Length: 167
Image (cartoon, rainbow, N blue to C red; front, side):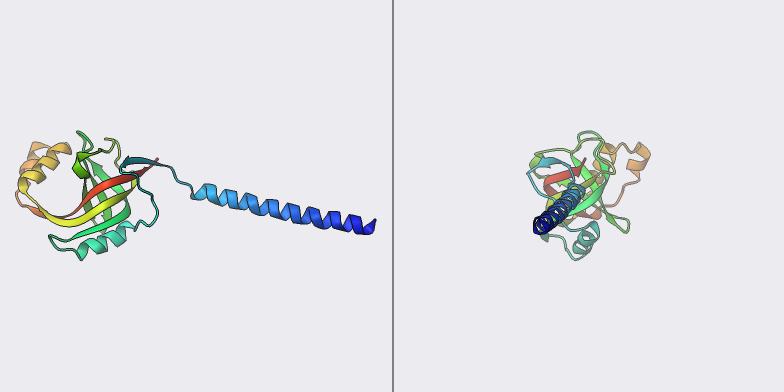
């Protein structure tokens, strides 16, 4: 009888401890799960680098270089007419101008400040005055602000083939 009671006690301890471990694992999995809206090519958020790491990579690129990469950042600004471009924060007052491969998809117009993961090609380019003025117009800048754009600028550019936006 004592032996049967001892086996039952040990069995219930083992069963209870296993059940507790399972609950903790489920809880940890739920915390790690993030929901994204997907645009363009289907991508995953795994193996993406941070915005700071991306800025360092851009600093080492020269005009004509390209780099296939995936990085996470926050949207500073999105085209207010069609969602056909966005600017991503790279930290230290730097940002990347992102366009979408073959105009195959667009971002929602209210995407400012959303967290995203982008996949595609990073490169450095010179943007002409006409193009800079076009972007300023799309962003809703005043005629006076647009007229002040008189010099081309080098920019960190990115052609995204897929984007995940945190819901």
